Length: 344
Image (cartoon, rainbow, N blue to C red):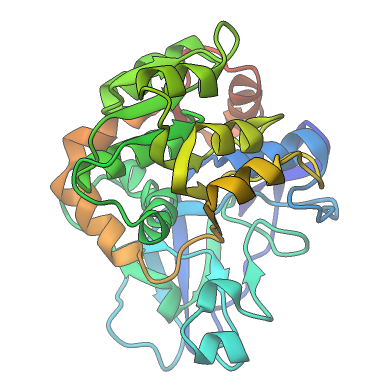
């Protein structure tokens, strides 16, 4: 089978891999579509994310859908040709955190597309049957790839605790930021500000539901938000960018007693945060680690609100053009929102 291997920073090659028979309890899936995530792009650019260095070669991609090719022994409920969304996280189910239901912080988690664990930018993959979620018939395989980032956003909404007509600011209008804006509006949020330096992404933020957009290159985001709210600040700030000074800007934009939810993954191991302002405001700060059981809900939401989310996918490209896809996203080129690699 063909696979896309990251062999050094910013260089991907297409090569042949061998796919073994699916072991007991596993399903062999023909991968059909893979969304490129911001963390994939970070790995492409800088040799890893979250402070974990990659070991080359590495297969990226963890937002995926596919079609069942064959099932291993002991698997029921899945047959050849069934369509599925593919969960990328492999949990142990036995550690303290899994037993408590916090699977996303499993002590022995293996995440496909992370160091030493190949991702989905390959034509076939063997997965535990429990990592497959049926894809609603109303969703295309390409649209279905949005389930993974949307599940993360829905997990973040549990921390945001959105109340009717509360105000919010979202820093970053990449795919996760755009999904966050849409989720906030669906949750009943009132006025939502989007902070985004890239012009076409600000336009997409408006279409996703943002009531106001701010270019941080031409205005101080926190100052603008404070001015618009009469000095009060917003009820919640969600940082989907985690770039440069965004943490401190988020703290400044939040009201006293507000919430800060951090979804984005910083480039740096250490990032600035004005702790004294956060302390004086008595902010509640949440970190988000992927999702935790929200995938089914994400697929239902995508199916029921497909018109709201479909436009986020601006590019579909074949596996042979995966290098070009990553370069396009790196350069914020061609009005790119979400790019999906389609297997033929």
